[in-house]
Length: 189
Image (cartoon, rainbow, N blue to C red):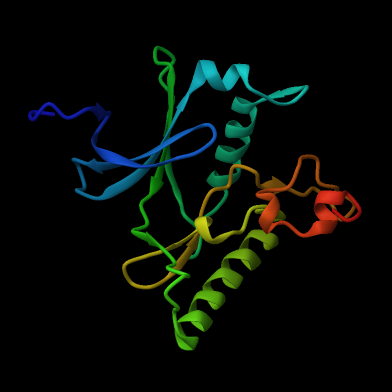
């Protein structure tokens, strides 16, 4: 922009929000609508080298995540706004709805707030399941709270679509400490 800030299309770079195993999440402002967006920035060459299973690269996972997120639109789900994939760039961008904060678990949230959050989470999970989607990584870091106090489920990087009732988990579950033991042991999918 005019102030020397890094831009991607109509988005102006404001600062880093966080980092994950495949890339980073950066806060951007859209100069057309003035809104803030969380942009997942991934390095394509690196993603093409990393193998998640013998037959798939990490980029395959990202494409799966994008396809899945394009199907979703719900008040308790972090929405995918757009994907920016310039063939002349090493970067792959997922522009996501920006959600202001996370649930502060260590300070206590009160019974009424807890019930509200639980209703929001259940509503989001029911919506996902009605679309045959298993999130696979519901944990505090993936539960975000809007400025109006609504909880949204984020990070669909290990989510899966189930085709029928006999489908089994094809990949490892999400964060082990938040995963049911039988999923890690492979006894129930």
